[in-house]
Length: 306
Image 1 (cartoon, rainbow, N blue to C red):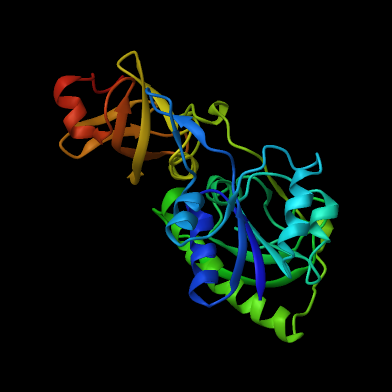
Image 2 (cartoon, rainbow, N blue to C red):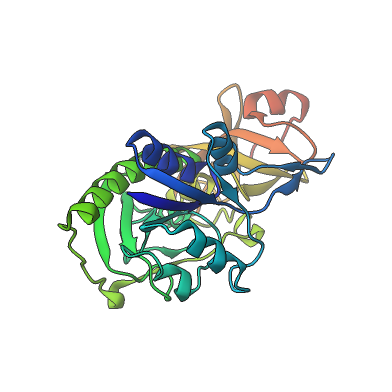
């Protein structure tokens, strides 16, 4: 099938890779414009652009989707199907409806749950035990189109959002391959979503970072996992703000929430509001590097019981 692909981050690379491997005709790749990065502000390519260029695919980076230029490009490319995966831009209806087979999206949740920008993170933040991917037809309303197929997977107890993203990218590629095969041979079934059961997964912000020790140990563990790699959970330690990258559930304790119970080779154990503790295993001080808590404590001792 002649396909126009639209995507930007590493998650989308797996989808594009599967399209290439299964022999589809990629007439073009849309991705976000290059952005300056790090202290040198050097312009960097998106992961999708890097992959596309190494495979000789034509790359397009429109800055706007509604000024007519993007539509003109799509018309010139004449795709039979548009495939979108974490592109990061809202597509106007005239582009979505142009291909004869329409436009489909690889969404990293089991719709109608977790529509929106950060479904993987919010599934973990909310303490969900299961998630998945959905291939759906795209319409004007956000993530509300008919479902072609979906695949589910368990969320592992200590899995963070970055690790889960990688697994869902692979699962999404499997689902995409199945969906396109059905669309091509005319056997795809369009299943309308139950809009009354929908939930929303908004963009993340730094406001989600501070850890409140009056919450349960499980909720704080989920907060740390769900905010990896950005913006990361954070806490005050010895009067300094640190980012928290890895935690482990502790046992039952009898102490005031926020009390430091242990600080040593095993890490940092802190009392939570539900009568359980949480171990801080990896952290990063402002201006420093990510490291094991035990290594940090060697140079920054803290007082137990405070």
